[in-house]
Length: 176
Image 1 (cartoon, rainbow, N blue to C red):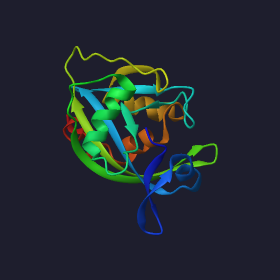
Image 2 (cartoon, rainbow, N blue to C red):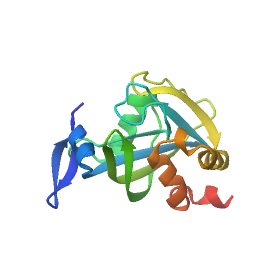
Image 3 (cartoon, rainbow, N blue to C red):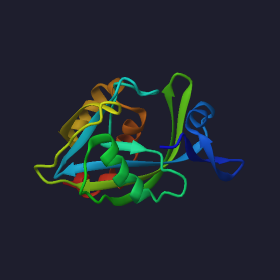
């Protein structure tokens, strides 16, 4: 795994050290995945060893693609690395951009390719303890309500996705 990620510097995409990207708040590429089981979404609690937002709940998985790595390949890779999930082929839902303070003087300014994958009832989940300390399935409506009640327990990007982009990401589920 590389420590550089694709970021825009002076209007051009360049490989930049991941920590530097977040310290400078540079706009960079990212991928987020939501694994769904009907109206329930798989969320994870970030490991306490993560360098930002440790212990907070997030969407199923998210990461930064390697240089020249297609977003869809990155989504599949990260499902395997973070949660031991294989055999799912996420579909691209949208591309969104957001900027958020993630604490400790770090900023996420991401251009995110968002994917959704539909899981069966017996999907094996084997979390990597360096990435994930817990996971759970939660109904999308219940998740939205929980984020509104206790926003401090959730990552800034998950709050943004649910507050600003929920219809674009989940579409049919929002109207169900």
